[in-house]
Length: 292
Image (tube, rainbow, N blue to C red):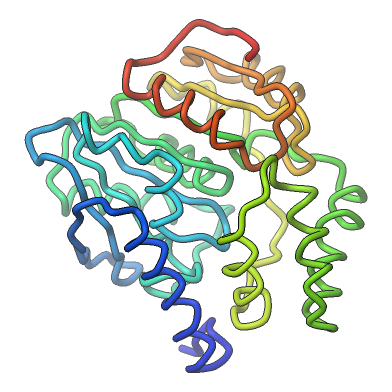
């Protein structure tokens, strides 16, 4: 199978940034390798094994260290398993799964089984939210509760706005290598400036075969069958998955929706302050609907 990394040097530079980010967190961790029918999955585990388990799923074009940085204190109350999602610029297999079938759900179920976990909490951002919802569709028997931040797979934004404000700057950077286009891209999606994201995505855009497949939305009948408690943090100014639109549909299709919050003044990627708030809610348990 042809590698999704465009060159050996490109892969090396991306994984060096991966390691730098992980080391900068100063959190004791261990690597776990889980063999699945879709390929080897790399997981970064931290926290006491006696604590309840939580699986973290990062967004598209991301990696597990970013998920750990987003919620850095979870390991104090959970046994954290930060998963390198398949076919992303990280250390897992490069097997690209379909977003239209049950593959992602089956893959997550295999991880839970191989790790011998029960009553698992899950938290995911953006594309990680799609992965979690696919897992709930496939087999939710071992999943206790989920927390989704600006998740994909519930609604989509205006495709023309996304094209001109997000994808066009990305393509211009890939053509010109002018860093100003990376800055434009990030300004549309990130609430706060993120220096690591600038470095990491500047490499990923040039050295990794990204997936531009349109993101589907969950069928209302499938959503209606989910019984696991769902908590959603939607972003007010999310150009990809608009917050108000998301909460409106979520309230209609998810009978197990436990809480839905609109993060005011948030773009697709939340601020550190907003992520700390989400982290506290995960550690304490779900909350009633509100705007914050």
